Structure formats: structure tokens, C-alpha cells
Length: 589
Ligand code: G6P
Image 1 (spheres, rainbow, N blue to C red):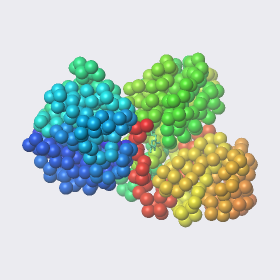
Image 2: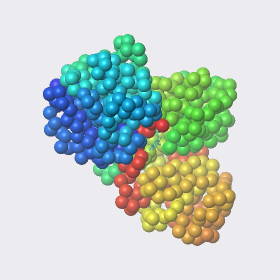
Image 3: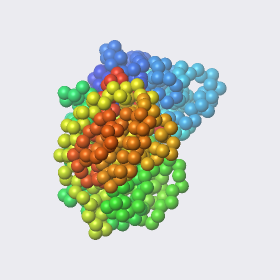
């Protein structure tokens, strides 16, 4: 989703901004722009499409600038709506949504101010310009403007009167400041600016930052100075490389075995004892998450119930945040998020905290907002995930969540099966999953595709379907195999590919009923299984995975489904790394 970069220092700002924006590209965006201040005038270059299209801006002179990648919310993705927005002597970039933009815009129009874009963000430039005209102080003007905003924002503001200054404000959208030798950088995300020798400070909600060359000062919501400590972070955030793969998605799928290995929680882990204590006390679990993380939550629920006998409920964070949930005694909320910045997941976790409930975050990105909000944090160790569609982070979340379920079981004197063999099995699964490439012709151009299964296989089917629709743009649905006949079967005909996930032996006969039901309607059935079963010749093609513990099977069975989505996306001519309309980190509601 939208990304922000800013620079104030001795170097030319434009190349630094372009490099920072390139590092943020993975978040997903549809237009980009930079503005550089030189001799009291802003030079602005904005383009629809990729950051590459800004190449001509590289030679803009000036040592102060801000840049942005925009993911359209208000107004179409086009040059006019791209950031930065300039109004009079003020230039801004904004991440988030100004919910009361229409009313604020009307106020500005009453003053005779004209707008150049359809965005909600432009109103911020107008408000700051108005206040700056009254107060003559940029920090005070940004503060005054923020008092009028509703919604979420990370803002960076320049004024053409101030050759080295950027003022930043943050509310529910991430922002960081990095200081180096006689220079300061700001960004929405650590990888955009972290480098050896730079110190990174995380701005909190309601705080303001004022940057001037190598100096930064932070202020609280009442503009009182606050002192901050830099956070420890990996300074080696070079542009991610594809390492010989054609796409990041292919590379990241190949990293599933390591993700499983590194994300399992072992007895020698620092937080092992603390988590054990938390889980000893836990009697009810809510898992809140979005997208792929929601699906890993569904898989984990089954493990918590089966191994630890703890009741667990999985909620879309976007729904949970507006519920009035009943928290039984000793409830624990587990918030799962690859980025740790998903606005809905943060809001769901905040709701739990406000109700006095403990929150445990399962997050892949260090220093993410969710980690600071949560009482306890488990870092999945999948490594950086660049492709918008999550792959290895799904299995990493499973490894962490299954470990927590095993720990909860232990806390109750029960035993869960070991996860130790999963990485090696994942390697085998990756090898056999290449076979699904041959299935591609049956899927390209399909009117609808179904992914079905029961129990843990249903969870895998949901994730397989999500991956498929995200990057192929073909309609697909994940469905419980037993529910087909209650509606979905009406949609099945000879043109419908149906992927059946069957690793749950106990329910094999039941799931095979679904195979018969759909093949009787002429559907092409594709089977993902880990045992040989009699399908009565009703299956067009299948892939045989290595056997594993039934409850853990989604960690493997999703692999061929990820591969299927990838190959079909390629056959459709899509870029699997950057699917249209989607963003890696969804920082708005
Ligand atoms: C977006 C991404 C998905 C991801 C979801 C949740 O929709 O495109 O891949 O699963 O957000 O993201 P999170 O960072 O909270 O796991």
C-alpha cells in the first residue's frame, strides 16, 4: 500500500528518494511521485504506474525532498491524483485515509481555494497552508491541521520557505525517521531507509517529528518535546534480489522449508517459558487476522482444539473490530499478521486491549506497529516477503501457531505431535508440486474454479483459492466439501475445474463423495492428496504429497496450490508479484 520517503541532508535528494521508493515497491501501488525543493521552488514529477517511470526526476537539483507510492483509495490512479500534492508554499505526501475529507474540502472551497486532484489527501496541503499563513510555524501548522483530521495518516510536509525542514505526523499509519551523518531520512517502512551507520526511530501515533538536515526532534500530541531511543534493526536492507528466480513469488515458495524450520518455537527460545505461562492461564482463544493470516488462524484453531482442548474462535479482524465480543475468563487474543501493519488487525488488537484482554502478536516484520501494541510477541522468521501474495509467511505462521498449540497442550499435560519433520517434507512437496504446471490449460479462462476439502483440508482449500484469485484474476471459491450440494453444485458444469484437497484419511470417503458429485456434472477434478485412494477414475490429474501429521497437513498441501496459482497467473500473462489492485501491507481500513 502507499509508501513514503523523505530526505533532508547534504546529498542530492532525488536519487535517495527514488532508491527509497524502489525499496517500497513490494508494498503494491499504482502511481508514484517525488518533489524536490530547490531555491525556494518545488519541482514535482509524478507518474501513473511504476517507480521506473520517474527516472527523469533523478537529476532534479535540491537537498530536500519527499516521495510517495500511491495505492488509490479516493480518486483514480493517475498523475493528477498521485502524490506529492502542492498547495501554495506547502507540499505533502500522505498515507492513510482522511475520512472527513469531503467536509474539510468544502470548508476550504468556501475560502475560495481550488483543488487540483480528487484525493482526500490534498485537503491536508490546504489545511497546513492555511494554518502556516496564520502562524508562520510549520510544526504548529501541521499540528493544527491534524486536529481537524479524522481517519488515519502518516504525513510528511515541506514548506518552500524552509530549505532543510520536513515535518511528519502519524496516526494509525507507520512512520519512521532514520538519522545519518548530517542527514535525516523519513519513511513509512524501515527497509526504505535503513543502512549501516544510520539510527532508526519509530514515531508513535499522535507524535510529530521535525527534521532539519542531520537533526531530528520529536514532539508529543501537545507538541511537548519527547526523547526517543533508536531501535535495533537490520541495517542491511539492500533491494531484495530474486536470486535466480523469475519472480519473488517463486523464490519465496522455494523458501517454505526454511520458513517452517525457523518459525517453530523451541524450548531454547527466549520467550518459551513466558509463552508457556501465558498459555497455562489461557482458557479461550480469539484469533484475529486478515487474508492469508486469517487462514493460518483457521488451521491453528483446529490444532488448539485438538491438542490443547482450548476452544478457539477465528475472526476476520475487519469484523471483530466492530463487534462487542464476549471474552470468557482468561481469554487470549492472538493477532496474526505478516506485516504487523494491517489496519484492521491493529484495530482488532486495540479493541481487545481496551477490554483488558491480553494480546499475543504473531508477526514477521520486526518493529511493526502490532508488536508494540501487543503484550507478547512471536516473530515468525520467514525472512522478507516481497511478492504481494503471501506464500512462505503462511507456512511460517503455521509453524509458530502449531508450536503455540503444542505448548498449550503441554501446559495441560497433553502431547502434540512434533513439527520437526515438516521442513524436510516441505522440500519433498516442493519437488512433486512442479507437476501441477501441466494442469494449467484446464484453468486458464475458467468461468469459476472451486477448491474443496474437509477439516484442515478445507482451510488449505480456502488459502489455495485466495492465492488463485489474487494473482490469476479468475473467480474462485474455497468450499467445505460437504457443503457443495447445498448451493455451489448448481454452478458446476463441464467447464468447471475443481481442486479437491484430501489428506484427512478419516474423512476420505466423505470427501470422495464430493469428487463423485462434481465429476457426475462433468467437472474436471484435480486431486491433492497424500495417500492413494480409489477415485473411481473420476480424477483428471493428481499430485501425491508425502504423508504428515493430519493436523499439520495444510503446511504441505498449500504448496501445490500456491504453485498452481503461480503457473496459471503466468499462463494468463499476469505479473504474479504485483497483482492488480492489491497491496502487500494494507494500512487503511
Ligand atoms: C493483504 C495482502 C495479503 C495478506 C493480507 C494480510 O491483503 O495482499 O497477502 O494476507 O493483507 O496481511 P498481514 O500483513 O496482516 O498478514
